[in-house]
Image (cartoon, rainbow, N blue to C red; front, top):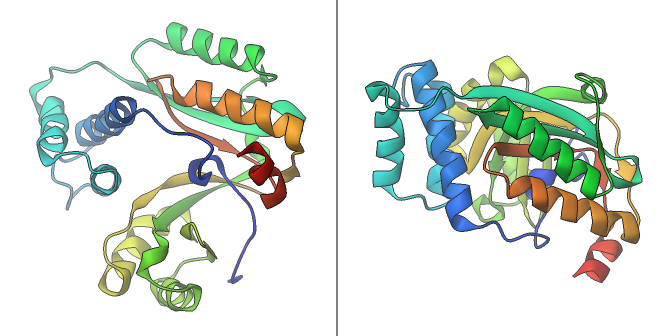
Length: 247
């Protein structure tokens, strides 16, 4: 297991966006409802629901909101959401994977295509870029849980495959089938994770210069603002110097 893998993904870009709170709560609640509908409404018996609830708690979603989202699944008073993945290219040759939960695929594909076209990107065919990513489990912790050595040792003991630590926090990577087993193994040492979900990890990263980076971040922000878009993954690497210039 490698100690550190230096790359940046969309989820952990710091300071480049300020997600609207209501939109974020809506997306987290939607994931909770879908997870509860697909399995048991008990987080202890449903790994996906457990991860969704933990992610909501990490973003300070009120307990009442979380419970309402779970209850919606059992009452049947909810839309039928589909999980649809879109793939394409952003500025600077960056590959993007856009994961959505939608009750209207025509609306969603139109919005995604428009966002891409207006911000230096283009929507590709299914599987046009995912071959350049590995499907893995990703567990995240804030930097406050400890230094890189402590997290590395805990991850190694729990059966993780890789760890990346920085001042922004810790990313612990696992095999897909081991995600929730490793997450549980980490809890006695590090506490509850900030997030635990399936993720797309790029096999290679693309360095993006200042001009393309500004356009790329604008594209990501537009996609993030769409309620149907849950997560955007990318294979970009933006240097600290460029990030400072962008503010």
